[in-house]
Image 1 (cartoon, rainbow, N blue to C red):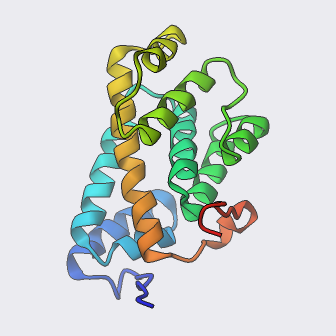
Image 2 (cartoon, helix red, strand yellow; image 1 turned 90 degrees about the vertical axis):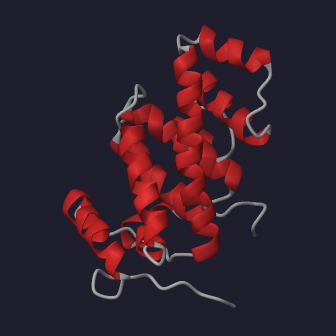
Length: 186
């Protein structure tokens, strides 16, 4: 079995070191998945650039977490599910909605359900959502531009979800209470 190292700033490829330093300064830690992504400076740079663009978009931090949890479930990424469970709680997402999302269901909040459902269909249908999916999303008060922003969110999540599968980064200590296992990967 091929394993990927969980890099420190000192062991990472030279081009990844400033990126890891930035994470350390910004988050107070280097998440293990990012430390594994550091093996490819191009992936880590791209992931962090898309993260910055995505976080500067129109979705609230809680909505970003809803989208991330939806993608983590659909793509079966245990590391991402644990990370975004922690972050969703910090962003004020209700425990009931977090539990629903971890089980592949819609969040309980009326506006967040159509957001998650739209993202779920985006992943499942590889972007070819039905007009009824888009209409429900728009009917919840989101915009056509935000439907395209969901594409950005799913692209951001896809990088982490796929890297999570490939690198199999160990779960960071703060994420341990949020351990999750996909039924399809068990």
